[in-house]
Structures are given as structure tokens and as C-alpha cells.
Length: 244
Image (cartoon, rainbow, N blue to C red):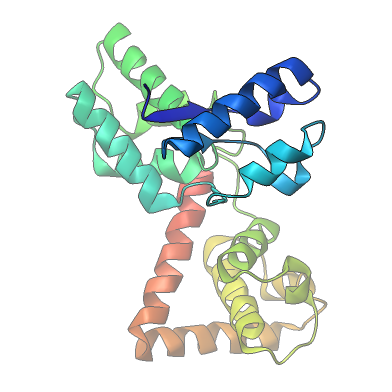
């Protein structure tokens, strides 16, 4: 009589022959009656092991969707929705700080919020950035660390979707050149490293290359508002991630 059957972690049926036999008949009955079946798994149907071929073939009948970790905007929306449910008002900068640091797990994101609310209630203190920093320390290990050239390279490479080692090599590919120049610009702005030291961490380039890169980035920011927004976004992400 059900309209929808939802089963989480279908891969746990692996090796359970009797259970698979029963589920096979349930699946067929529901499918024949045009009912909805939703299954989740930690791998694609073709990669499931210990599951009968007749079940695998049926899993492939429907739509397979690969669910990725939620982006910043989605994490913010989830958090704002949770706060609305709880009737709690949290400053936007605190929400952003939490979402920049908790990236992969929604349960962990909710755990941070529960801890934050509990701390606020227990010590009778308003929820602010300082309290958020204290709570976040129990969930991540990057808080209050110095921004390094290496970390800037990693974050910029991730933002531009390029291999970080490419920032050290000679190449004329525009996206890699821009990523390298932006990394140098941010390294000069956000660290206390000398121009010579920064250049050495980009494949042994000299200080004049760093100066040229910084000027190139500034010129692009002055003439391209979209690029300027990108620079500001990456810089904000750096500051939020490491809380300098």
C-alpha cells in the first residue's frame, strides 16, 4: 500500500542472500505498481560488490545521481533554515565563518550549531564571532594558524581548479598564469614573506616576477569587476578559513 520506499546504504545488503531475495520481490512488486523507489549508496550500482546481478540491473533502471558536498551558498541556506526552525538569530558573519570552516559534512555543521547554542545558553553569552571561534576549535584544526604561501597556493589552485604543482612550473595556460599571479599577490598582501622568498616558492622565480604579478593582478582588478570579485572572494575565504 506504500507509495514510496526509501532505503539508505543499500550496499549493506552485500552478501545477505536471503535479504536480497526478499528485496528482489519487493522491488518487482512496487515497480509493477508504478511506485517510487529511492535508494542511496556510497558507490555507483556498477561498483557494488556482493549484490546479485538481477538487483544491480534493476538499480540501473532509474536515475543515478552523484551527490557532492554542498557549496558555501547551500551550507549557508541549510544553516539559516535550521536557525529559523529554532527561532534563533545569529549574525551573518558568524554563519559565514562556520560555513567556511565546515565544508563536507552537514551533520558536523549541525553539530557546530548545537554546540554554539548550548555554549551560549550555559554561559549566558550572546552568540558572536569570539564564541564561534571557541566552538569551532573542537571541530577543525586550522583555526588561528598563520596564513602561509603554501596554504594560499592550495586554496587558489582549488578555486581555479588547477593542480597546485602547476603554479611552480612554466606554462602559458591563462587560468594557471592567473592563479599563479593571484597567489603571489595574496602572498605579498597577507604574509610577511619577502618578495625573494615568495618567488622561491613559485619554482624559484625572482623578486621582479613577483612585482610584475602583483601589478598584473591589480591592473585586472581595476579593469575587470568580475575578477575583482573573485580576488575578494578568495581573500575572504583565506581569512575565514584560517581566522587570522
